[in-house]
Image 1 (cartoon, one colour):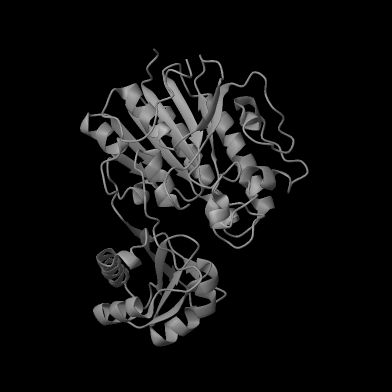
Image 2 (cartoon, rainbow, N blue to C red):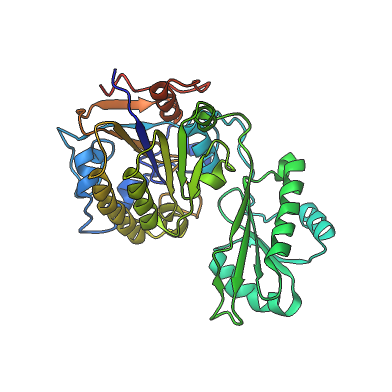
Length: 394
């Protein structure tokens, strides 16, 4: 059986391919992120993904089935509960999450949490509702400048975000407050959101407010070791790109790179593909989700997928016989669906090596098949869940 020196896993964040059987429990019947966004653009074109076999997974506009796909293809079922980023990524690397992380999209954070945070931090807070970060800063930023009250808000994710203007609240102080919020939410399971995020900005008026690059995430650590830890323990390189570092709180990673957008993320993956390493390159491309899925912008999402397709074509030029590429997702976020939340969907699975034929991998029982395959390839400890498809693709 062929073993690979390097494995590249690219998570197209939220690019679901159809509602799961239990989608009705989440209010997500009929969702299909990729299919629906594709029909929002008359000239939608993803030739690279079509060659790999994406049209064999679900119906995609202008993207027919490929009888001879370059990649093995299938779709994956989420075993864990919920439909959030942390859960999806943790399951990819072998963890079964049985209790969903709490979100406060509809209600805002409990008064008891706000009171405790005000007492511990010494600050007052305004906001406390679900909103786009740029919009809530525009709406409340001028009041914040006048009163020094910090802006607290959430989203459709399991997240607590605190925004403050760097010119009146030093970064170190904002970070201190976020650390207090992290401790408070860890100590109370009902408040245990997946991430606390510091959101600093600058500017004097709503027209000039701009978020800075000094964002800082305070994530939960995975509750058990993942495939990333097993790789690191055995001396393999584990290179992360994008918000993978935040999602796993740095656990099991040997090298990490931040990115500003999907395109830069793919440039980083392509750069890493040109260096000699032995192990895993693990990338998350968040623009699909953050800029277009949550904002219910199907045309923008379609254009973002087209950009990814072009960048993917460039990456393939640098992949060698010793490389395996896995393209997948962590949940859905259908931009044509109601609300602003993620959608409970199957996720795509494309597995490419330039010496192997594309085969039908069917419907996988868990995202953790990705982690199990990585473990199988590098002969490291296997996760508790997941079945390797390494033999199936050969």
